[in-house]
Length: 479
Picture (cartoon, rainbow, N blue to C red):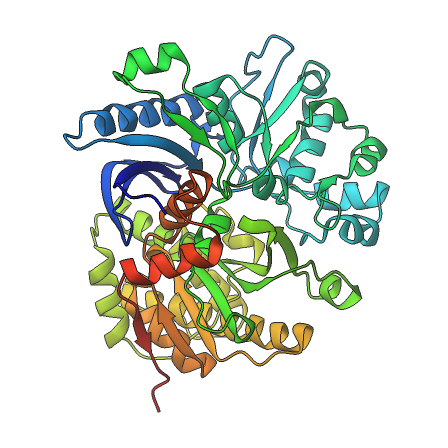
């Protein structure tokens, strides 16, 4: 362990906002400081959804400049994590061919059926262990092949979102291990690309890059970036669990890992278990569970559940209609509202990207013969309860698939600030809920940087460091 304090910088890019977070490590604890925060989300152009990748790069440079201007900087490294599946394509001269699409764009409608019409679903799952969701990279690339084949004809390099941002910073082109595993054409047993799937679909495999693993060094900041941001010292860019859930799980302070599940709560709810090897069989295919890869070569055996996106979209629509509400006000109203007036399936495709979420939920309630919520408190309560019921269903399936008894739910991420959801989760699942850290993704990003720098030995030491650095909160089922 190092004998002097140092700082590392984590860029945590979520689907709704991004942050530059300074991790101050004194040899015993990590203190976090948010240096820069900015909104994120899709940009709609001609009816299609994109990411504004250059604006995100601008925000990274702003965060770098702010970090350099800290009086006690001693900044030695940085790392980026983002959401999964999305990507940019570069031509032979390393020019970005187009703005990256947003995973909620409708171009992938119908692509699942077309892909599985050419390559059987069972074959894809046996090779990749990834759950089928139309937003996966496999279906996005097939949509490229169908709707804009010219872009694949001219593409030489595929870089997932964090890989692309790292390329902008360093000029180095890699595909990071954890983000690659979300694509649905990476083999988690062999740790290699499943080129045969792409070849059978007519997608060029030349675009795939060499894999880099969490804890490896990608490169140094380019000179022009250093000059623009006022960076004076050498600054190493490190590969971490660049899929944000991989970093969040890395920072999850399990007590008994074999009897615990993680629940990374944010725009999405990612609920699962950390395993030492993939679990791929007929039952896991039938239940549509996924085997994504994690820090220290762990496997995140999980289910993707549409999470607080439902609340976020309701809040946006209410504000558009003149009802400005804080999340605290929404939670308070939900606490006072009537219980169990409706239950929805958060993963119903109609909730993926509606223009009016409250209206869509009300219509869903009418169609399914349920009571329609009368106000925002009832709407929010029904969403929170529905999420907790979904967690209960997934945990029961996890217990069956792994033959383990789950005792504790480790909830991490920004969603744990909605304590009503934490308590409902305990009540409805009947399990003990342990919450923290809120900034799990940044924490996991930071401890992986510290592993790369030789400051801590391994993932378990990193999780013990997290325990020392935060305060956990417990929620028990109420009678």
